[in-house]
Image (cartoon, rainbow, N blue to C red; front, side):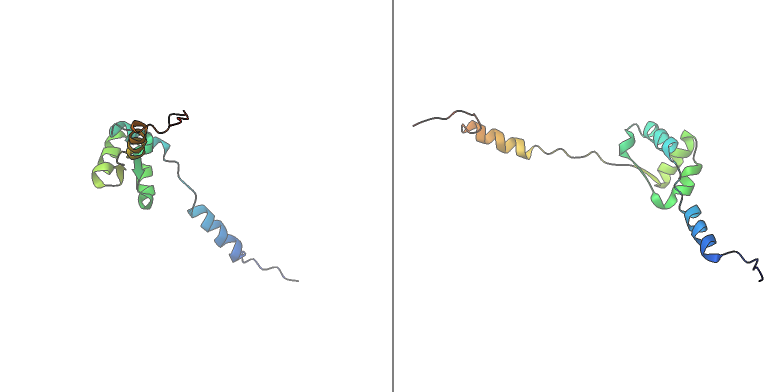
Length: 104
């Protein structure tokens, strides 16, 4: 019996796919961006299409340049609506939600 020296293509291609899709840690970039943009880390958006370029940025100056280029964005503040509070207060002015049973 002869052994073939050619490697199995199925194994090598699956390994290449796993190798190319491994995630890069962007913790440092997110921390620096939150410092440069003066906001929390949850307000920082990093462009998922440009992960490799963002990963190379390791200084505040580089992070500021990426912000100018639009690869790092400061997300807007989340709206906390008071509409339900207003409706409840209006009802309470009419005597609702007091917890007392009033017999007329």
